Length: 75
Image 1 (tube, rainbow, N blue to C red):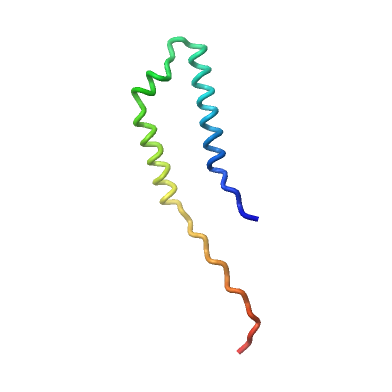
Image 2: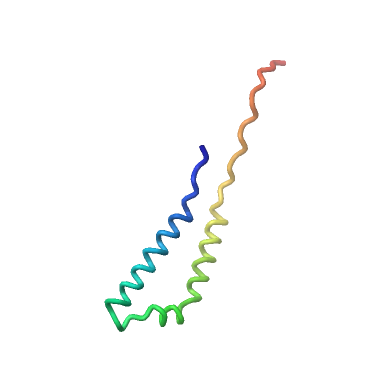
């Protein structure tokens, strides 16, 4: 059985939670404006994505090759 990759599920869940919090804050506080903050700080998103990619690159672990099958021949 192959191991599941759950990075996408975790990212999607976090994005949905963040969007829910943003819309909730905009409903509760009329002074709060996500779009004004986004317009000012959108480059931070690019920086975070780049840092995540660099972290993934430098923490990559090679998977060792499986051992060769033993044929049972004795020399």
